[in-house]
Structure formats: structure tokens, C-alpha cells
Image (cartoon, rainbow, N blue to C red):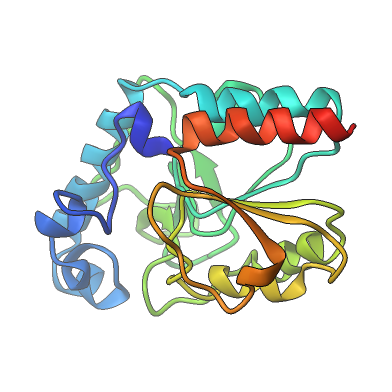
Length: 220
């Protein structure tokens, strides 16, 4: 969803993995080898985030809160859903605007806008180095159980702008109740064994969410 706002993606051609090795900036091992590189990588992401705005897909989901109890489960680490006005956003893979302690995983703080970067030597009160509040490859996804519970209660389910290749997030479809309609918005062809249950909207997120709005409000 955030690609249309100018946020660099990870998996598409020209994305972040063309510039950085995942092993270097998004794994615990990369952090151990070169924490300075990792801190600069995420500082660069925060600088980019400060310069972009939500796009129409973010605003479209926020508008749907007028008619539905909308719960957003996102793999994105930006805060564009919140900026667009969505009230209930669960970040599976962490949040770019926050940091946590390497010593105490429960110590999580929001970075101030005027000082959105951390350096080696920035520590929590218990002496642990601060690191990005990001779930790296090889780490557990703490929010996955909450995401599964939300998915299991869905009356309508929409999947937007994902390849369904990243687990455990891709497995959330397995929790959607059998009678709940599923919509999948992506301009590319997405293959899934649940295809017979899915209404595919082959469009980018901004126009696809607008189409989803029309479909849902026509039935509401």
C-alpha cells in the first residue's frame, strides 16, 4: 500500500533488497556484525517516512470506519495508516517510529519527530542498547496470535498489496471463517489455494481500495 506514497518496497525490482543484503540489515546476525550499518539503514527509512504522506488507499480504509468495524493488520512498518485516520492498526513486523531495548524487549519508546535517529551508545534505563523496533528475519512475530484472533472473527476480509509469500502473515487467511467473503487487491497475479473463495481486484492499492469501497457500500 505504501509504495504509492513513495515508500521503497523490499521485494519488487528496484526495491530495498537491490541496494542492501537482507542478511546485513534485517537479521539479528547482521545487527551483531555491524550495528552501525543497521542503525543507518533504519535512519534512512525514517528520513524517507518524514517526507511522504498517506495515499488514497490509506484514506479509503479510514473512510470505511464510518460503516464497518475496520481492523487493519499490516506488514508495513510505516505509520501511514495512522496518519490517514485509521483507529485500529496492528503492526506485525514492528514500527519504524519506535525503538526497543536489546536488554528488555518490553522497553519500547516512540522516537520524537525532532530526533528520529538512534546511535550506538543510546541505551534504555537498564543499560541495554536501543535497536529498531522491527521484527527481523529469524525472529518471532509477537503480534501473530492477536492477528489470528482478529482474522478468525472477520465477517469480511481484504488482502491488499501482498504476494502472500511472507509467513507467518500469509497464513492468516487460514483463520478466516469459511462463510466470510475475501477480497484480494493486487495488480499482479497472486496464486493461492483459496482462489475459489476470493474476489480478485487486479488493481493497485489506491484504485483497488476505491473499488472495494464501492462493492462493500453497495451491499451495506
